[in-house]
Image (cartoon, rainbow, N blue to C red):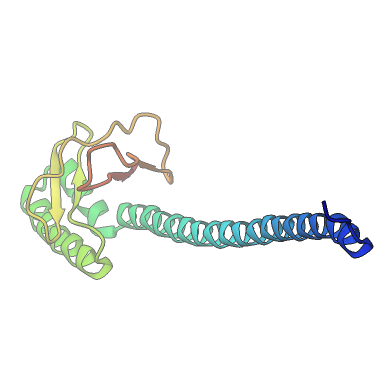
Length: 168
């Protein structure tokens, strides 16, 4: 058997300690770097999500303002007044003009497939816009006060349209 030298004894004590220390330091650096990268990615995703949510909120605020603007149209008031007084010819003339106005409004905003005025029974009285198909049944507007705007929300499976309504 060979006699162990002092250098050999020192190496047997130092090498495992050095290798263990290097492994632990590398592992801790990996954990710290990984945490910083994941936190940075999370912050970036959170920032993108907030930006998208703000844009959507702004979009829907604008749609609510549009609904209120359309209910305040003088042509709509004239149509309702003429119809209430039984002036059918005048009411029909204003209804056609209002339909053209709704169509132009929909084209200018470029987000509406169709704009329609429905009476209290849910029957369509005036409509305009690029889409010719019916909008489907209106959502219930019970409890809506003048100046308020209701919306149907986005219904599961209904990818074609969302209803907005306001009391006239």
